[in-house]
Image 1 (cartoon, helix red, strand yellow):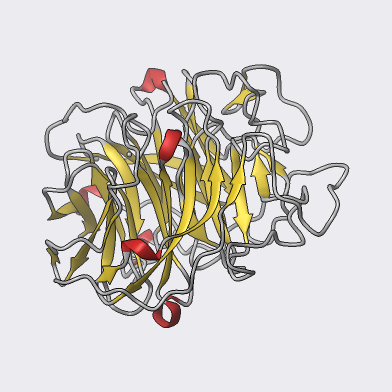
Image 2: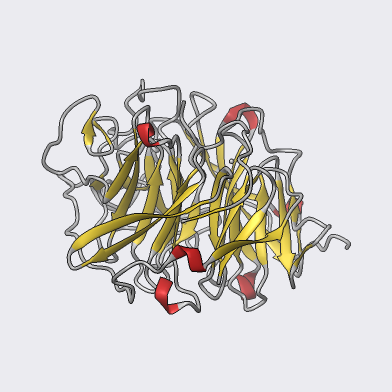
Length: 409
């Protein structure tokens, strides 16, 4: 295992207890959909009687074993950022990386340098007064090259979650182009989730925490009429705000439930599988997995379960337990979900990389010979706030020390 840098102790972000402006042409935004913690928007199909967990399938992957991590390093490519919490490409063949700073700014990394001018500055509306609050997630529309649309997830007035669409041209997005799609009441300042990702079906997926405090006091995780503690699935190509896909399992925005605080979700670009890093309560951190083609309605167990262990209850039929977990007794405190490597190093192809905020460990996870294999690959010595993946499938991570690193040989 490779160890580098010195541990920097900073407040835990994800743990339960982070050029002239060009204004593109826009149309007047429709009013946002405002949703309370237990209210959801109506959809076109009825609620099914039951939701069953999907069948586990083997993801497409070249790697059947782990490479020797000592032959690789995480190379520093950018520094001086203010609490970076997300790294995303626009997938527009520009090669740019877009890095979120938690207080409300998106920066551009282009041609080997961090640009001074922000891509987007919405510090005037982002509420980052809590450690787990702020500008938290970013996803670019699959047709971004044509329409300039991208989506963000942030906490605004009252600490409530907002999912909004903006429009950009070149290296600048107009802050006044915001179209607020969805506002979700947050009862407490922690467990906001925040990740956004477009799935292979073209829908926008959003990870939301259970609303906070500890132990899910309102039991939102198991309540399929609450949007908290869920993975949402939205059709952002339907109307001025969004539509609810007709095959969503509960007739509302919810695609999957039973999550505590999903800190980073991602789709394998080669297979379409969904990976989720769900932050634990006090004992267990977990990685959840849905193979491509899974039907909606999967229940990941919180707060009946914490990881694969009983919390409010015991294992029961219908719960989809994590594919791997690790305990706080191993030195971890808060999982940071990652990505499946699909870059130019074939020995890493198909390996899911994820980390822990406190310990700085990075694990590799593969399904080999029908068994999940999990191994610590790196001990970075820094706090890991997020992973990222560029247009070529290469992997990056950011730290609370303001640095961004790239996996390389």
